[in-house]
Amino acid sequence: MNATAARPSTTTDPSETTRALGWGFGIGVAQAAIALSFWWVELSTVHALMIALIAAVYVGFAVSDGRTHVIAVECAVVVAFFTAAAVAVTVTPWILVAIYLAHGAKDLWQHRHQFVHGTRWWPPFCFAVDMAVAGVVAAQILLGFNFH
Image (cartoon, helix red, strand yellow):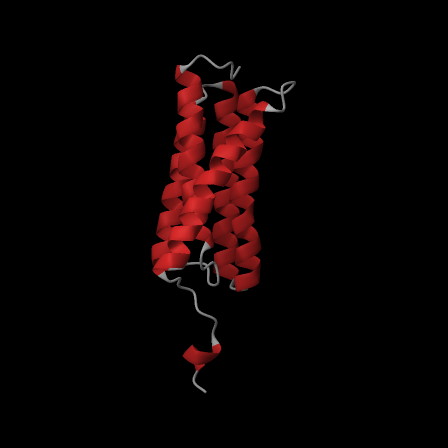
């Protein structure tokens, strides 16, 4: 058996990607709705916490991947998203929209390049979550929801 055959597949078939996108969109809308259930916490703070949690998931993937440089890069990405989310809490909720869009872009990049091995269907799923939440948050801002 060659080394390629021994390694698990890192790609997904189109139907799996389509399912991941559909589930991701649904979960993203639910995630945005769940943020409203923490009525005693400002929406900006809830989304900042969610963003940090979402970004941190890739640290788990990186640890599973096992390569030191992948772990270091994913940890740095978490720090960047955490910092940007903290800024959003005090500056403007539009930064939250930008962060969700940026994380979605990172997911697309990850899906295309497979920087972290073994993520298979996760990047398209997370992309759809990020895009759905970004859209809902943008709509909430425009509708006058209180983020501060």
